[in-house]
Image (cartoon, rainbow, N blue to C red; front, side, top):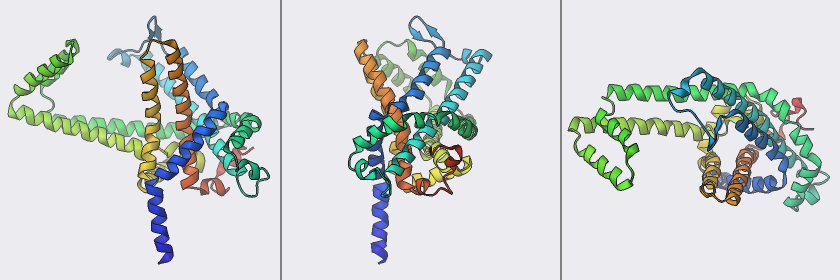
Length: 341
């Protein structure tokens, strides 16, 4: 039966992408621990953030609305946004080159594959000693090559998010909007000291609403949930568009389309990929709540480690579910940038 229907369509696409994700994650952790060169751009970027962001005696100080819309703040956020895009372009070029090197030296015809394939630690050590500077050297060419596509894709994403928010706001207004009584009550909750008092205030407010106000509130909340759900779906479904731009050298619009196809083929794997950065932030926050300086250092180390793993894992994942990215020179145009070394 045609290979048992191609072995049940490759065992349900490796259990909807969970197995490729797990292998990619573990290999990324091993390389991240031993290949410190991947940390350098991230550390430099964080240092620049501390330089650019305003500070106060208690730490970083950010503006609140409506001050955030002042020209000086808009200019600052524009500079930081462009700096972040440039950083991602160069950093992702390093990640793609790292995965490409790992794949090339573990090929059967590779002169070092006989030993490197036996021991993942030996492979990582070789990468660290022999290829660290080569990997770091791809950062600047990567910025030049991928800054424009990353900027275009980011603008498209932000435009889509703003369009969803505007449409949701207009729809809420057409449905009657959130009752003014609810807005005033929620605003006053900032002065409420305890959770029981907040719950009591909310219960009194909800019981005082008319049936029409109840209907308007319910419709508005459903509209907000739909808008956030659509934004979250877009974030998850298009998680791989940046790695695809770098690895496959395809236009931005095709990277969005291919990312969506990969999400539909490997939903669990792509979902976990999209959640990886959030796990690192949440874990580091648990430690950062403590006033112990040792725990603060641990939190920073966890955040750095996890962000590198989160950036490397999507490229590892693509190398497993789309091996043609590494095997075909005709589709892999990064060689034109001398990124293959």
